[in-house]
Structure formats: structure tokens, C-alpha cells
Image (cartoon, rainbow, N blue to C red):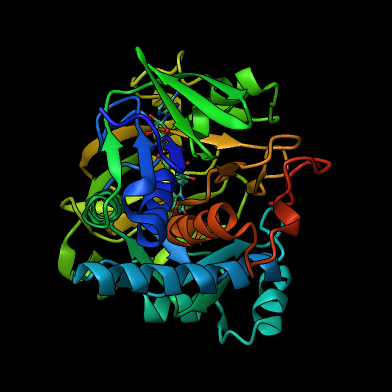
Length: 380
Ligand SMILES: Cc1cc2nc3c(=O)[nH]c(=O)nc-3n(C[C@H](O)[C@H](O)[C@H](O)COP(=O)(O)OP(=O)(O)OC[C@H]3O[C@@H](n4cnc5c(N)ncnc54)[C@H](O)[C@@H]3O)c2cc1C
């Protein structure tokens, strides 16, 4: 087995498979990807029918990066010959009192010259009668939003990485990383690989992977869940209904009928703190009740049968900003951490990570995403 590579990626979930793909486009067979489970497994954060993609964000840096993400997804579509993103438009809903201040979204969009519409609850319900809202709710509609079919996108990144020459190995848990003679030695099972540049895209396992290098991020892991509620696709399908986020406290989000015979609803940070090893796949009944309550109040046409509830992990620094940086004091070792809203950026993360590893630089502004920054409490 070949054990010497220029570039090694640890973790082949949403972000790692994108990094392996982008590296393989630049360096072909000099790329190795190592995944502790099988490709497409369900133990991490990226494997479901759908993830929301959107330009609407609370800070201009995110809007800019989201534009780059859309371009990178389109690039993947072109290279694979596969249509991936489904455009639905996106609705941010903010209830007065407990809701987030939409002006941080509108000013960020204005700064980046992205068009949007602000509307009252009556206009939201006129255009999307699936919603039942009280009059204190304000809506922000932005048309460049929709669905990334996550499982298919991950498989496409991995398939194309291989087609461009990368070696992707499954069931290869990385157990140690050492620097020897200026090179990196990565142990996975009983094999030792050598490489010059390393990308760590291990999400809930990030600190385990980094521990041998003496590096650590202040990450919190929670066990989250999403529920699919049966709904008629003519009324609740992606042609008729946008992806949406309820920017209240608690915060909920949802996706029209896609991949299952029903809409998907989740609560943002609605689950208990766990670790990647202590998590279970058990359903949190209290969290399910909150989501079902939200559905019956605001989406009454889809508040009936539950098709299934699926658990998943959130991994977040305190400020919920990404980490996309070189590990301090470890030249050639890079970390990508998606702060539990990073899927939509996976394609551009892959591009940026490949640029950092190959060129040592990227044109994207990564200053908000430093490893060594002061981590303040989240703004959202
Ligand atoms: C319920 C839910 C809903 C979400 N909704 C959205 C959304 O709508 N839009 C959005 O943008 N984001 C969303 N997110 C967040 C987004 O999904 C994550 O930020 C993103 O998927 C993280 O990707 P990742 O590749 O870092 O993590 P993962 O997909 O978990 O990949 C990490 C990989 O590293 C591997 N690994 C770890 N340790 C090792 C090791 N030692 N050796 C080898 N391999 C290792 C793991 O097995 C895993 O495959 C959601 C998350 C959840 C849980």
C-alpha cells in the first residue's frame, strides 16, 4: 500500500470530502483521505437528505463567503454533470420581542448588494399560505436560498476526488499525528502514512485528532434531531414553499418536502451536550414535543403524522463562528470547523483548504475564523 502522500485529509464528511476533491483537482494522486467509518455513515453531522443553503446572514463576511459557496457548488455541478442545489428562496421569520433583529441581516445583504424583500406577517401568509403567523412576525425573503442534497453532495465530492486521482480510505481511524524530520506522520490502524500537509476536518472529533499536536479548540458538542412531518408535496414541495428559519427563542428551521414524503423541521441547539463518543441515537421526546408544537402553531397543514426523527451532532465554538486556519505553531496543518451551520459552505471550504495547503494563501478573508481568536459568546 502506498504510504507517502503530499496532502492528507483526516475526516471525509461534508467538509473533508470537499477538501479531498479540491486537492485532487490540484494534486491528483498526491492526495490521501482517511475516514474512521465508511463513507456516507450517519455518526457525524453531514449525512441527511438536505441542508439549507442561503445568502442571508447576519454579517457581511458570511454573505461574501456564501456567495463563494454558491459558486463552488455550481463548479461541482459542472464537473460532475449533476444538478445538485434546489432553489426555493429563503424566509427568515422574526417574531417581535424574542426575535432576532433583522436589521443585521438587511444591512449585511445591502452591503453585499444582495436583493431581498421585507414583509409583514399578512404578506408572508398571502404568498405562502402554509404558514400561520401572528401579526407581530416580520419576514425577510431572499431568493438565493434552497436545499443542498447533502448525502448526494458528499458522495459526489468523494466520487470526483477519486476520479481526479485521490486515494480515499474507509475504516481508517487516525489515532496519532506526529511531526518528524519536518514531515507529518499520521497513524491510522496499523499503518503509518507520511505527508507534507494535513487537513483536519473531524468536526465532533476535532480535539481528539488535534490532541497529539498539543492543540485544542473550545468546542461544545450537542445531540440534535430533525423530524419529518408528513405533508402533501403539491402544497409543501420546494416549488411552492421556501426553506425557512424562525429567528425566535427558541429558534426553529425547516425544509419543504424533499427526500421524504414530508417537510423537515428542527430546533437550532435544542439538544443536550454530549461527546462524539457518549452520544446516542435515541430520540429526545421533549425536543420532539417542542418541534411538534411549533408545527401545529405555525404549519398546521403539516402537523400530523411523524415519518421519522433523525439525530445528528452539532459542534460549535462559543461564538458560533467557523474555524478555518492553520494550527498555531504547526506549519502545514489546517483545521476546518463548521460551527454547526457550515454545511452550505462545505464546497467553498474545500476550495479554500486546498488553496491554503497548495498555495499557502487564499483570496478569501479568513480573519474572523482564526484558531487563536478570543472566543466571545454567540451573536445569534
Ligand atoms: C441536524 C443538523 C442540521 C443542520 N442543518 C444545517 C443546514 O441546514 N445548513 C448548514 O449549512 N449546516 C447545517 N448543519 C451543520 C452542518 O451539517 C455541519 O456544520 C457540517 O455538516 C459539518 O461537516 P464536517 O465535515 O465538519 O463534519 P462531519 O460530517 O461530521 O465529518 C467529520 C468526519 O470526520 C471523521 N473523523 C473524525 N475523527 C476521525 C479520525 N480520528 N480518523 C478518521 N476520520 C475521522 C468522522 O467520522 C466524520 O466522517 C446542520 C447540522 C445538523 C446536525
